Image 1 (cartoon, helix red, strand yellow):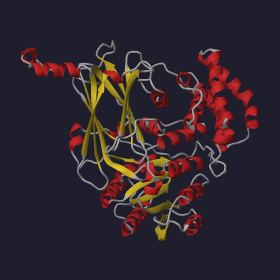
Image 2 (image 1 turned 90 degrees about the vertical axis):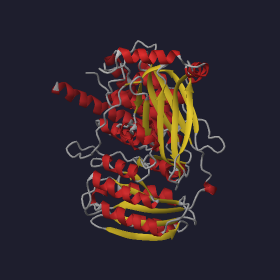
Image 3 (image 1 turned 120 degrees about the vertical axis):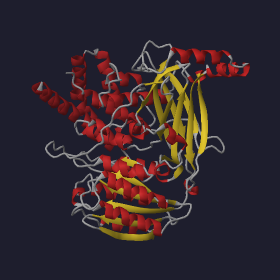
Image 4 (image 1 turned 180 degrees about the horizontal axis):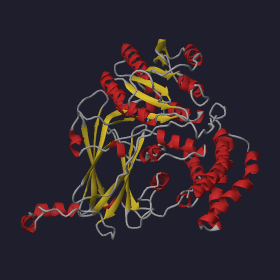
Length: 581
């Protein structure tokens, strides 16, 4: 088996190098002539892989054609709006030195509606998982299952959901259709969208750049990339913004304090003067950053610390639990903490996710200038301006129509049912112009698929008979209600707080039979494909016999959205690395 796995690893590396080069071309805007140099080798590699896997040559050609079509768009896809190349930092892999850390994830299983009709969890708009997985695949590295948070991969992309109605914070889209990986189940998609931000009406910002300049940040994909990323953010600041810079290595230092956002040259001179050296006293830097943020606090404004780091903290408070406690205390000040992850080989994904989640901010992973532009410029409102705090979801399934359900992703966001109405329980924040997607795999009552239901001692026949007698006495009004409920699959309830408030608001939406369709939307099919991709990467027990090529066959060949188009290339890359046992 070891020899077989060794061969598998070599094959994965070879094919990964070919398609990583192709995807790199797409991201950096290299000339089309470069594609033709690779085309024969990649076509042979893809066709050979398909043949070995038992797939028809037609399907292999489809994968190849889709990959090459995506790459032919590279001349424009890799160019930024200012004409600069979208630089991609492809790290050198060092298998002998890898201390990356991820939280283990226990995948959500099916729940019986008869026993557990409620599903309660917090919103999650982080996107770090997708860009980090992209980095791992492009480097030909094994993807740690803990790195794959399916909800973050789905929410990396934007969707054409219903806009909010007047006075409502969210537009809500509900759609259900056949599940692409299991013919005995259905797939339910719930989509939320907040109103886009008019930049001219955006609140003034009080931003603290908290930059890790320790020795571990020396590599090209760390501090040098941080400096380029913050140049993009600085270019979009205004005279109404206040900017401070705090750095930390062996100790923390205030580099810039309360400078007007229109002093761009002064800000960038401070950022570009930084050099990486020393140990990592991250907790001291966090405490100082909060002090500065509170000093320049803008009432009704966007008060936020933006931490750029690889997460490798080794001086002062270093454990995830202690860092979490520190940030939980500090968030009461009204200052948000967002985290930008950088680097390869030693990133501490678990710490960075915990800091952002408990700091009421977002967690993004930056692997290129292109990704920096997406996070800090294109989605500036969504990532830096919060419009709804402590957003919680609770779905109640109707046992008359649903036998079982499984929440896809959100494993580390699951809440106790009673937490839904408890306004002291922390939950996720949603920014302006965000889309949030939730997927459930549903077992209808008429499905042949079974869901585990324990035999309980005290659920006696006598009790069942009493309940039956009570039901016979139901009034005409109650009968009418039952008829109405037969048309409902579930009810989605949402609790949220307006920024700065402490009492939540409640919204409810019925998911009806009319939301089911035989012709799912483009958004539905794409979100389902991303979920399948994540399940395959994690070797999920629920993904059946689907393959990466199956995912490609479910998608359109062309997307106007360059990030969705790039996804096709990434799935193609993963398909070449997936060598059958």
